[in-house]
Length: 544
Image 1 (cartoon, rainbow, N blue to C red):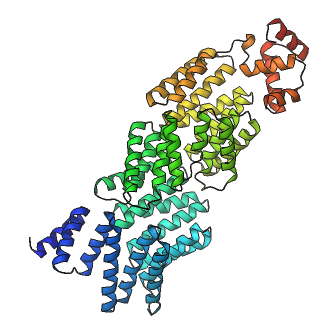
Image 2: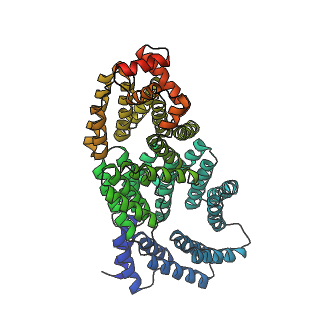
Image 3: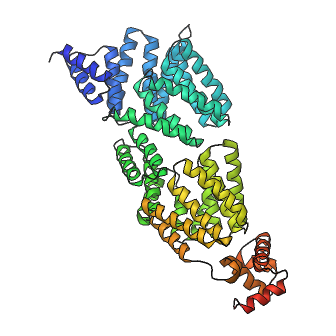
């Protein structure tokens, strides 16, 4: 094959996104005769997409030096910025910043405004946004977008709209923000932007959608990302993030074996590129799946490794300790997590876990505070996923507080939303609480049906701990006369011993308000009106 033939084949492979073949053929042509700049850039992009970062850096630097030799200052600055972006994306902030500084110096001598000046604003805007100065970031991204549109630079305009969308979301202007993210994605799906930016924008948009719990958008763009990655099987960057996002969606929809496989493949993809902190994402997803399936030792090790890679491991680790029966450890961990600052997308999950753990530890006031905060977040954001989480937590607190009728209404709302989201595990967990609520209301037949249905779903999913717990609850029917729950029997015994509501609250780690509600329920169920009559009932029925 002649050099010209190799060059033509390399270009064709590049257009077809066959990166390995494009790299091999363009490299062969370059060996015979140095490539022109357009083909050199194709070779550099192919190298990056194959994970050959050092080769890609060398090619960008070579092109930069050639442009300087020719006196093409603007283009030299652009190549310097691409090199700087590559380095900073891999965490080499000093080297990357140095290349951006060089680009800035080269453009300082430019008498006219140009698109390259817009590219220089991009890292400034992102630095402001991640540094907490959202207003400055928003204004700067607006400049980036305006310059991109004016100079007909799709890459620059897409980056500007991505940043505008992210900054608007951080200002709680969620509807405006996601609309701009959708517009940025149109440029990606239409293949108007360069391949390297496609992956970056895909992952950033999906992260933003998950951050506002917009499950529909996250699922839609994850599907598009999957198609994009599958069309480029030899691509290394972005494929790992794609697999993690797929694993999260699969887990929610109950496809746990597929989620396990996707998380494992994501971890392997990340580990191919040394220094990839995103490997913690894959390890955390693996840990969560191990925990749900009862593989506690494997879950603990995966959480440990995720922490090693710098990933936030709460609330997963606290939930693991709860599942292992280590309530004190779970409570200490979740309380610490509540006191820390976390990305806004992590807070609702921490609150939901906190409510569950605190109820297990009989801290109803703490659980109520967590559920109330979660409800406030859900009302503010309005995402169905958050509303389901909030209704579940609220229902569990109301049930523990003795208000079974209000609990049932909240739990029915939660189940309906989970069902609509096609989230079988979460829906089954809510059905367990519905069963317990029916039992508290004296409807044992409905309680058994709800618990049996939940156990069956857990069995299909492979959620071994939930199967065992739910089957135990199904066997634990109340035995006291009058339809009293186990907690109400405890309260009645203490009433019969002569204790006040305050003393009973101290003994059972409940609030006085909760004890008063239990006493009222006891009187109603047994048709009594005084503590003396309740005491007599307890002695007559051998409850003391």
